[in-house]
Image (cartoon, rainbow, N blue to C red):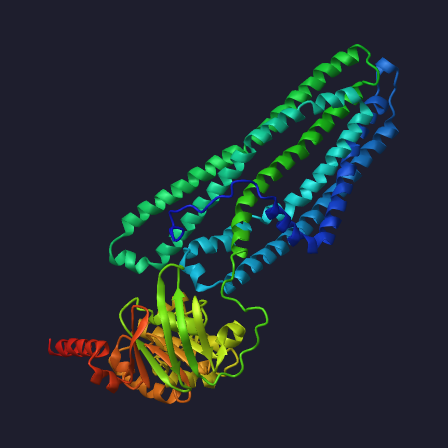
Length: 605
């Protein structure tokens, strides 16, 4: 559980994983036609650009006056050469414009597909995945890490392929001009290769550490925003700022270290380029003075021009290499999330759940969250169709676990859970949960209107049906008192609403789904006593012919349940209706009387 901390780094892969790169290429494959078209037009642009040094050589050696070889010049040829260079440059500009548009669209399409895959997979992951991780660390993978791949996918791959071909073009043109000068230019390559070999692993690790620190920072920001009320209530602002500054500083230091390692390459390339250029000038002048065969002023100028073009794509390739190392640290996290096993999923051959009647049976059920400590120990009971079962007991006894298993939010460790005699493991999760209404203890309200929030569980419901559900749970009156009634906009988590109002809206949402099995986890915990009395009247009608499970600490709300189970230590200690359990004078009796005494003293006080 250590990973459920904002200040704990995630595990790093020890080596560069080529498999991640291969998986990234799978996302590119459906767009290979657009990418191929882009590469072709870029190669045309590159080939056209390679001709300008040749034209410069012709201008220097053939078209300009030169007394050394009795050349009187060729003005018409010079003008034609200049015109050709202008046309070539114009074509290159147009090609680059097309390339930018196509690659930007291509990159964003691939980014959209990766983000859709990771978000879609997150929707299927079991509750246990979210129990073990800060939500900020999950969010940063969907947004920040995926966005960081944008430049790599939109420009990096196309530019890399194009630059590789450009290098071959350039070397070919240089060799056609002069082999000796070309070898002088290539002499710097081994030195660059040695530098890359030395720093590549340090770069990869540095970017992995940077991504970890970024993840920690995002996790803490998300946690702090969600807990801002508690923070201000306990005057923790200064301590939170101190923790934030520490995490932010750690990220800044890690990022700067990674960037410094990245920036070792391009200064090295610039230096090597300068050294080879100086060598060309020195050796070229000597060879020209010595009347070396095939070396002229035009040849030297053309070679110098090619040197700039030769090292420019190498610089781009080095930048791509840096981007690739950065992207790999993000890809590790992205694919790790996509590969996270969906433990709660449809088994092979799963069928659609028939229309549920509502009979529920636990057969010797054992369950553990962590595989070591059992939360439920050999629990067995049977609920008849249409019955209302209440589950009570101390905190941590396993009450919420029972209802979570009915909705199959977790897999059983042992035993069977049957609905209408059908093992819920043999049916599809969608068809099972579609026929259930669940109101969890945390009444989550989505950003949008009140109407949209209630309709969330049944998107086909009419406005009249939404209003009827709200009236049944006594939410209609307070909704109509809002400025825009059912069309009132609420913020995420319903910050404009009271806790009781949020619960009533969540209750209406669950009831509107018209479930055959209704699950209420502390559904009335934030509702005042007066509203609770009205709510019970509505529930009495709505629970008819509907199997219901109710968890409640306020025992007055479950006195009319068909059966009450007292759960403790992962087992059912007592079971019966209210009167039977009161006569038993066991644990339920003690719990009920302690609440009764507490309320009585509260009234007297």
